[in-house]
Image 1 (cartoon, rainbow, N blue to C red):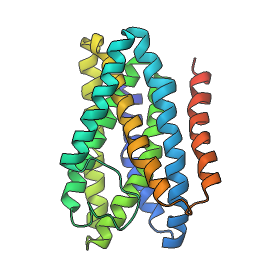
Image 2: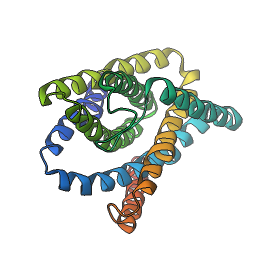
Image 3: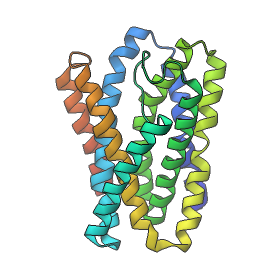
Length: 247
């Protein structure tokens, strides 16, 4: 039963996000440009909410505070290194200087990122199904605008819709081995679980603070700042209400 729930959540965080993005791309470009900043703002709130209200409190229950915080700090620098080497980052626009001619690197970076999302979901499931669901919600929230940007870049670089969709589906499926591998491995090494959650929280914090929020600052007039701010709070509130309901 637990494995079935993990499968559903892994597919929701991967394939479902790509399919939702595929539908989103059929919207007119003007509509996409107005909606993406809103999605990014909501995703920022869910990521920070999941990190600070879900993952870190659970990690701190089972491990010393200095060790958990050191794992978070180390995780942030780890993801910085990934961004600089494998373009492990998120695009939310069609004209991206780093990714405009790097379709293959996008797929590689996404595959690695989705694998780590799977590790997050699998480790969260070991703590509680509720934490796994809220973590998956945060994953889906930030995957949709990311996949939208990746799709748009691939299409503008000459990829066909079919090829771009297949490549994104393929990279998204790495969530499954990440989720089940983490679930089974951490079942035997539970002492590592709080540190895996701390590093997972670091990935959410890094994406929100190093990517999503700066992107909003670069385009302050797009998507109405007040609305974006409220949507960010709504993302935090969603995670907070969900956490309260499952405790």
